[in-house]
Amino acid sequence: MTTAATQSSPTTVWKMDPAHSRAEFKIRHMMISNVKGSFSGLSGTLLENTTDHSWSEIDASIDISTLNTGDAQRDTHLKSVDFFHQEQHPAMTFKSTTVEKKGNEEYSVTGDLTIHGITKVVTFAVEGPSAPGKDPYGNTRIGLSATTKINRKDFGLTWNAALETGGVLVGEDVQIVLDVQFIRA
Image (cartoon, rainbow, N blue to C red; front, side, top):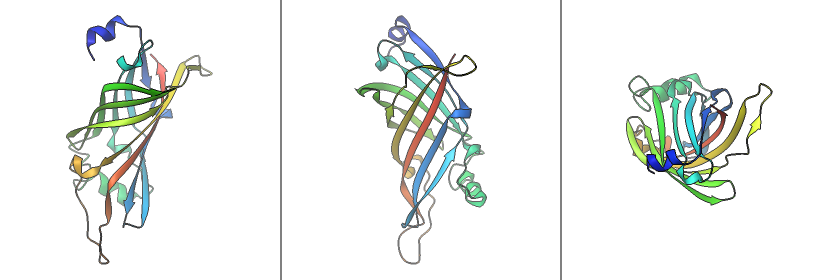
């Protein structure tokens, strides 16, 4: 993407609505079941090129302090130096580099995902954005969903514990699901 090409095309600026946006994850626990968790502290901007979505850009951030797995002790451990090290890395970020149309309202969005201070290229399968709609307060909104799978060890999240029966306490693959609403800026 070049800035000149983006600026010469009609672009709509959308701000992420944190009250109506959520990031969820799922990971294998003890090799027998999945544990789910979520983050509610999402923020970011979508620069939507209204004539050619391939020129659109997204820049997003998730506040690690909003982590919730339904278990306070586990949440504290995940925020510690063993995993996210929230004190040193208070947010994870994503900045798109490529947007590719895959079908009707389906896109492949590739970009730089930074977790725990480590940046890797990740691709999200995106459904949306939806058609714009007005809320009861006169704001114009759109929504989208995005999914991907990462290996947590690629981002330096390597803590684990061996089980007596063999195997490990925490799986490596993490499924990520984002449901996001944006408000026209």
